[in-house]
Length: 248
Image (cartoon, rainbow, N blue to C red; front, side):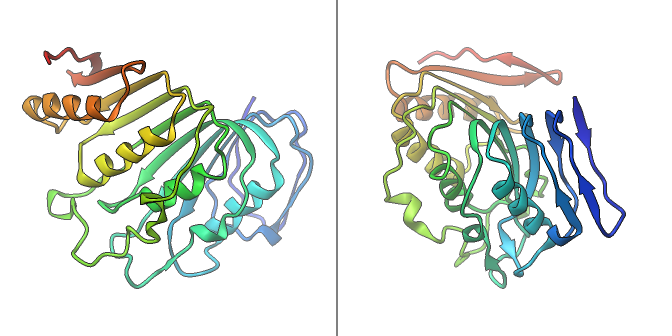
């Protein structure tokens, strides 16, 4: 079954040996939770702030699950950024371990910033994944905020641009709400080099992308890919996602 937990008590004892799906969105301190057996857990959804002050309760709760849950099928992880990050600390290095997972689902709420560094940090800890979903739909920002300011630190640390990463088990990838921003394109180009065993990728464009731009982005993504990879492109028509056909 599925379980949504919203804690109001200062201390909670949780033991759910048959629990299969857990969505944890509470900003609580791990000292307020005594976690018992959840060995049948198959799906975990949680949130982590990439930048901020040390000791964010939401992050501490996320880290608690990362260390307590050993093996799950699907991890859904929302990575959040504040609009202005230069006065905050980069917090991804606090995350040093992930469960053994089969499918990874990123929900990226990045406010126009680069998500390469944080995504690379996560992927190198779960290099055995078979499926990757990157959901860019959380870019609820105005056109004026679409790009980060000059001198922004969001590309740091920049090792993701040069270090090798082997995602040899990755077979399927899905990119949702793709806009074709510079940050998205730079990261996807690297991702194709890491995913040497990739068989299929689906790209769904955001409704704001013009048809002429969509065609150019399709051609560009083809240049990143390899002949053996099946690539499908989708657009939205009357709020319904449909397969997009274009001429080379």
